[in-house]
Length: 144
Image (cartoon, rainbow, N blue to C red; front, side, top):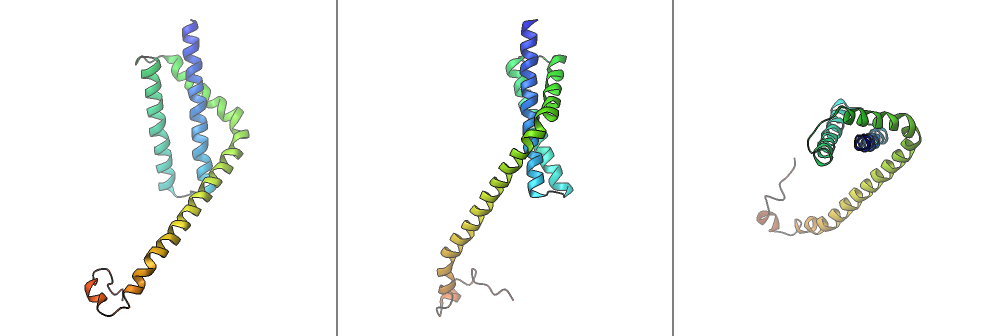
């Protein structure tokens, strides 16, 4: 019986972690304002795929492949406990974290474009030299 209780509590902890993981996806959707059905489908599919991998790993690593009813009850009760007890308090933190990560990503993208512009500037000067356009005509096609 104590072994079953420890396995149930481990499943409950995994349910709590999966609830937090889903909250991250909710925060990402909220900060990026993902309203398109395709993007929601992709993020939900990514969540469920990774959650399935975690659960299968948990079942094979801790249970040696044996599936018990209290494993599912533990997973569900952990997720429900997270949703009702911790999610209202932690969602603001996850939301701010996602906004920060999105801003960092946008900054890196802008810096990449500036660096690309710096390295592409000499090529813009090269095409004004006579005869170079014929040599590199595949690069400098007219976009009329």
